[in-house]
Amino acid sequence: MAIEIERREHTAADLRRLACRAASPAQARRMLVIALVMEGVDRTTAAKSGGMDRQTLRDWVHRYNAEGIAGLVDRPRPGRRPRLSPAQVAELAAIVETGPDIAVDGVVRWRCVDLKGVAADRFDVALSERQVGRILNRQGYRRLKPRPPGAERPVTFEMREARTLREPIHHGDQIEEAPTHRQVGGVGTPDPTRTI
Image (tube, rainbow, N blue to C red; front, side, top):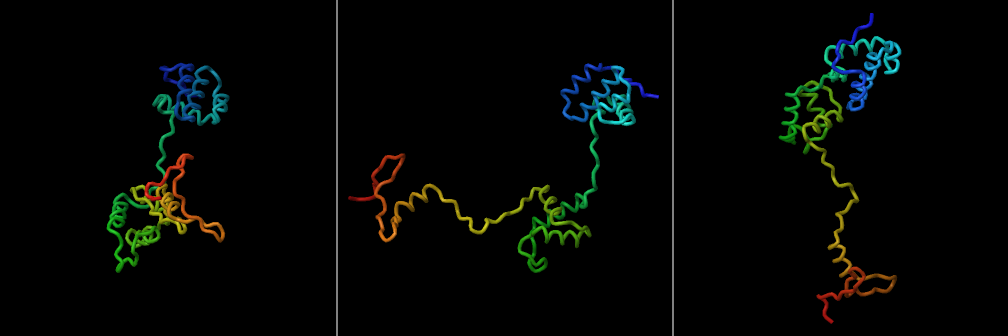
């Protein structure tokens, strides 16, 4: 026997309008299916039009009767239990803050691979380097990236101007003297530091 839709605060047309404004596509689809049932469409056809089977539609009707439109939203799932407790995460953050002791830890600065070993020793938990990085990232720590080899300091406009004014220009065997004026916007301006 089909479960009767007991809530009557919304008509089928109201549910269709609300489905257009729903933030969740799944919630909108469920509202449309319930609107079809309210209009008298048989449950099997209504369920198929919403991409579900009849039993699933029955479960959503139960939720709609109990909670209304808010019951048609997916509930948050608990997910996997974290490997480190909040107290252990706080202790790991304190370890990072104090820094390593060269004599004890054998490193100058902490890396994820080093903290992976610390977590295994202190908390008896096997973590990957990526998991350690994610835990630290959630605590507000960011990875320090050294400047890649070969990357030079960016040349500023002033540095480029100073270099072009004092360096001679080389053309094969001939050396041309440095220019006596700057080209600014296509107009030559005499160099005030040079005496004629």
